[in-house]
Every structure is written in C-alpha cells, then in structure tokens.
Length: 81
Picture 1 (spheres, rainbow, N blue to C red):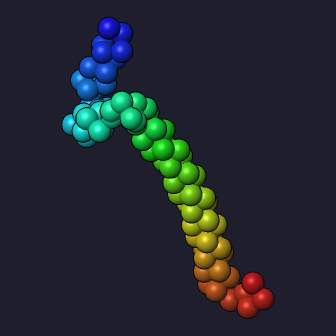
Picture 2 (picture 1 turned 180 degrees about the vertical axis):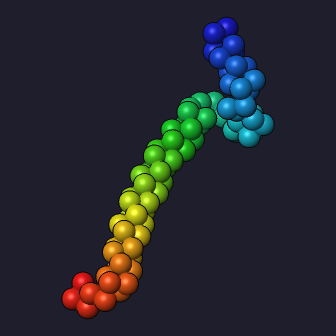
C-alpha cells in the first residue's frame, strides 16, 4: 500500500509519466528487477553527464577569463602580456 501511494504521489508531482508505465509493462517474471535496473542506469548516467557538464563549464569559465585578460593586455598595448 505504501509503495502504491508513493508511486501515485510521484505521478501527481510529475516525477513519473506514461514512460514509467511502459517500463513497468516490460518487466516480467524473467526480468523482475527491470524497472529498478533501468532507473539505476538512468541516474548513474545522469550523474556522469552532469559531472561532465560541470567540468566543461569550469573549462569555459577559465577560457573566458583568459580571453578577458588577453583583451585587457591588447587594450593596454602590453605586447609581453
């Protein structure tokens, strides 16, 4: 009962949709943990992708800072810089 209530709550909040129902329909006696495995893979991949995006953002900020520094050197006529 608790699981059913929690699942309905997730639907009500928009955290689950009809794709989740389709996943559940693919689960059977041969693959009783199918939904759990798919959700676990999704979150594992999501964490990896978010980490990659964060690293790219940090890299982009560093490039932007260096470009701004280069622009200031150019404006000041600082050839060495």
